[in-house]
Amino acid sequence: MGWVSRESYERSVARVRRGVGRPHEGLHGPGSTSWMVAREAVVFLGGGAAALLQLAHPFVAHAVDQHSETRRDPVGRFNRTFRHVYAILFGDLEGALASSRRVRRIHEGIVGTVDEDVGACRAGQAYAANDAEALLWVHATLIHTAVQVFERTVRPLREEEKDRYWEESKDFARLFGVPDEVLPADWPAFLRWWEGMLAGPAIAVGRPAREIAGFLLKPPRRAMAPFSWWYRRVTAGLLPPRLREAFGLRWSARDARLFEASMGAVRAAHPALPARLRYVPAYVEARRRLAGQEGPDRFGRAVEQAVLRALEPKPA
Image (cartoon, rainbow, N blue to C red; front, top):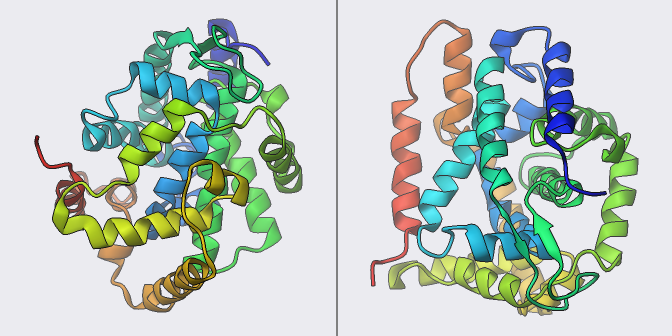
């Protein structure tokens, strides 16, 4: 596919700008499938699986290994990443475009070489964060995992909802520079492309991917060991079997039963949760903005930061 040029990126951004009918609502707005799915905090149960799926692309794994602060400051990196993701998803149009350009500037400095033979890549092969295939793969992992978790913990999505969700997500992908010509046309086409990627040599787990995955899934501190043990099994359950094995994640009939029971328990409890806990703060703030009530969701942000502090590794 090749690297996305500045000119190609600007064309994508211009297309998005032309297509937004209500700039104050942003890319999607309150009636969209994107808001309906992304507002659910429970979707973060798929965060580990999405991260490992991304690392299974050698370009992504080497970029994270050589350029990211994931190992030194995982919580900080999470905050910075999702600040931009949610600004694009839930912000107004100008805020979404500003975050898009900041991410583009960061990506322009992320270049290097693959240091191993892995999958279709050979040692010494050049990579860039603005590679079109890698950008599409990262985007696809977020969409596929969100749908998977939403359907397991909230409710099944109708086929037309999944088709609409994918169609809406194309604007999100365009703001990361993914060119139109590589975006699958609809949800069935997306699934065919997804399965083709998983079956082919482009997706392969190498040394940096395994090392970073091991770091991400280890308990951040001793008190979190039971949660980390459980979350490893949730992550393993959401991964395709080939990648589960490649990452060395244990999977037995007992693990499968635990995974299904966990998803069932979350699905049963989900309707009873108050909206203040169900919905991510960025969504609450977006609804407040559209109602003319500016200001942060203080309660939601306090809960969010408490969770992140609990997940932060203990200083050495």
